[in-house]
Image (tube, rainbow, N blue to C red; front, side):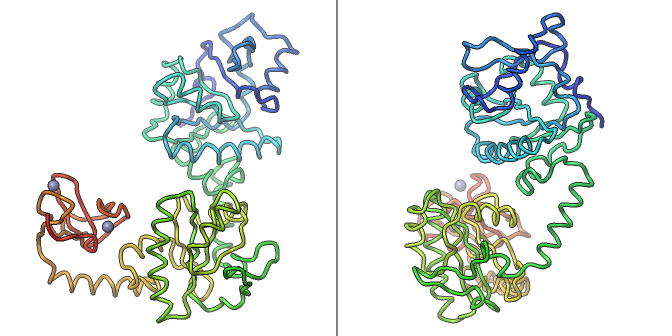
Length: 418
Ligand SMILES: [Zn+2]
Ligand SMILES: [Zn+2]
């Protein structure tokens, strides 16, 4: 599919808003350039315009050619959508990096907001231009042209106007940031093989040593990273500001304590996503395991390396230093201690045991938290991945369900009665 930029942006009077008050923004510089050149009013239909949100500044026109010859990201999003709010700063960081490198890249925000004020509020957090909120026709056309079904969505167009990524733009920014530029198939292949080589040669030292530091922290004491060799390690990404993390920490701590009584080759390392050192100290104070020293940039690096999209997350590293699974959190929720050492063989054993045990489970029961009888289901009999309505954690396998209500809970979360 080939979409020309001039076709994406019809020759209509389109206002662009730049970030208010941000004099370093490329759009502002761009606007200034236009002042110097004098806005061309002779053919208004051939131009895009920049309008600064400060209102006191008049509109400046930006020739359409300014977008031509560049790789364009059309960013479909809306204010107050947690996933958009999470994605915008990442895209902004990549955008800023690319601008500093002089890359020919531009982003245009296509708002899916319900009203102007919500649009403006969200757009203020972005360093790039936007299709004006009032231009419903253009927004509709863009939505339709690129079949946008969910937000955030980042549609990437090549400088020639070809569609490079119809729905993978968000994923590419999450995984590679500005390194994904220019988003071409050959660049993506390069990044994937680079990533594979990194994971293939992964060792615990490479993962945990920051700038040559060869130790981690055990509540004030230093522990050499080499002392962890040969152990199964859980890298625990968590933060004090995140309620699900705080909740999961308590569950993990009790499982860790009982696992450690049986297996001294198991260890957990806290990787802090806290906003500051005091949050880190408070968070780590609740944990019985070891930790990386506080370093937010390094946490970001590791999060990107393991493609972590949300916390809490528990990445399991095997005794050989290679990743066993990124699903440590779900496995702990599902199988608790039985998940250890998180290998496929262990999970098969656990599954077989659960299937055997399930023969003795009641087919239906009453649970104190729901007014209808709940029916026993498994993945093969109407179950499947679910979010437990009792503890709000993910579930899979044997569960109790009320199908008409869409109510499903872990077996362990059943409270008899009701
Ligand atoms: Zn539950
Ligand atoms: Zn029900």
